[in-house]
Image (cartoon, rainbow, N blue to C red; front, side, top):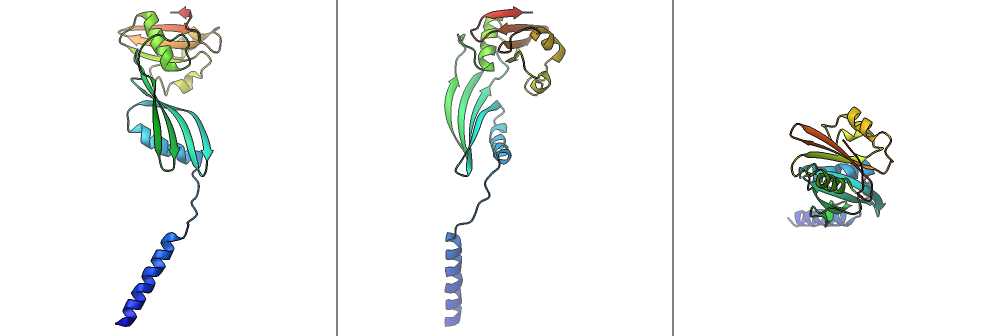
Length: 186
């Protein structure tokens, strides 16, 4: 009987020692980290995009914009600073109201300003830079008519914001520079 206690104590000691031995972790690749990020964000039913990423101490940091009502005249945006592993973030309110901006730095601001310019209070809008790749923008704006927007964007400076609005049976285009000056409408 004493042999069983000694054997059980020995096994318990081995298990305890094993639990304290550091195990080498394979660091996450950026693609794996983005997959965890997507898993966290896709469940929220929001539009999101990564502004920047950096590797730190075997993990990753991501600067992400999370947009609710992404195609409305009044989108709201939260900036999230993610750190992983484990997945955690610090939220910061970013765009919380629909006043017209003097400077347009993000697509959501272009949507707000263009809706104000056109007097739109309800509709489906998309905004992007004039030099955007229209095929790539289809994932953000599935209703985008690539030929029509390319024609509208022709001749505009690269930094120009283009907003496309569908409301009722009407489609309107607005080109705004970064200082919120209307360059062109159609």
